[in-house]
Length: 89
Ligand SMILES: C[S@@+](CC[C@H](N)C(=O)[O-])C[C@H]1O[C@@H](n2cnc3c(N)ncnc32)[C@H](O)[C@@H]1O
Image (cartoon, rainbow, N blue to C red; front, side, top):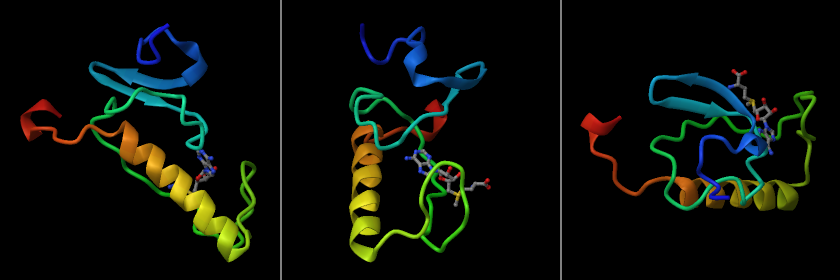
C-alpha cells in the first residue's frame, strides 16, 4: 500500500478537517510518509532539559540528544514539500 493513502491507519490519524490531516506518531519512524508529502511542519521538539514526558527521556547525554535531533530533523526535511505556494496552504 502506498504510505500516503489516507486509509493507512498505521499512521494514527489524530484530526481531520477539510484538507487538513494531523497524525500522532513517532517522528523517528522514517517509514511513515513518502518523501515530499507534507505541506507544513511546525515543531516543538523535546529540549532535553529534564521535563517528565510519558513518551521519552528528556535527559539524554549531549551526544544522544544530537543523534535524536538529527534523526527527527532529517525525517522532517525528507517529508516536507520543497516549495509550497502560499495559495495552496
Ligand atoms: C516540548 S514538548 C511539546 C509540547 C507541546 N508543544 C505542548 O504545548 O504541549 C515535546 C513533545 O515531543 C514529544 N515527543 C518526544 N519524542 C517524540 C517522538 N519520537 N515522536 C513524536 N513526538 C515525540 C513529547 O511527547 C512532547 O510532547
